[in-house]
Length: 332
Ligand SMILES: Cc1cc2nc3c(=O)[nH]c(=O)nc-3n(C[C@H](O)[C@H](O)[C@H](O)COP(=O)(O)O)c2cc1C
Image (tube, rainbow, N blue to C red):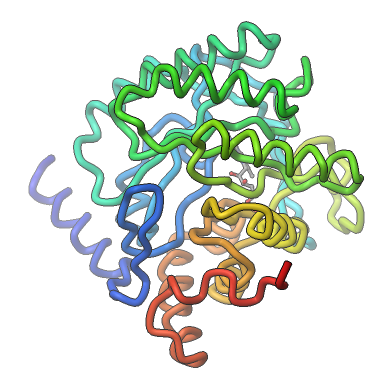
């Protein structure tokens, strides 16, 4: 990189990154300088990973990466919901495919923060091909991320079969662990829509399967299919809802999972301020991520959240963010 580009990056980092021992978090075998990450979907093809870390995020998730390039849904497929401070998307895994992402990750060099790769299947793959799809991405990109996330919860990809059923999860986790020669941590990303007993039972079974198969964390949550209460013009477009309208549901899911397992939970959904990040952590998230908040608030969001977390911890007498995890969870 040229000298002036390096200088600009250093300026950006010194402006946006907040360094404090109080924000350090150990999780998934890595050390995080702060617990606020960029969620999957923002950097689908690994194009801007270093820049996101320069802007103060403590970690970044690349993907969802599918084995081969895929167009996704036709446009329009992404809508802002300004009155609701949310978004609806039905991108459906548009991306350049694993080989192209591999080239990017090779060129990226060392990233100064933990990174994960979120992996998905091709939209039309049925159960057997799906296992091959996940394995293909996993093997192609194996050497690069600090951990992987398996995405079985996207609400806007075609529902060829129920990917998040315990049986299917067991197959996928098992196939990946068979290829996991260096025992890289693998997490699974779940959705927020557990409005029926059956779905709740499925979530707890999925977590049992995850524990049995050596999965190391749960990412909660993906976008919701619940469009109720949305006031913006595009509120009834089909697709997954993110941002403020998802916040409470996602936090409840984080708390529910925290009560079901000792695995760390990465909380995502409606994080757009220090207060909302703090709330997720108090309700059981070890790390948090944001997407929609970043779209609305812009490049200073990670700085705003990380510096605000330090103030909130000081106010409440905490010296480390690790002490805050789960303090508001109900006893079970
Ligand atoms: C435009 C858009 C694209 C997304 N793409 C992905 C994706 O490829 N893989 C994934 O696991 N989640 C994806 N998500 C979901 C986010 O990672 C996150 O789980 C969700 O948006 C909730 O967080 P937020 O309220 O901070 O946006 C996407 C979200 C949006 C808004």
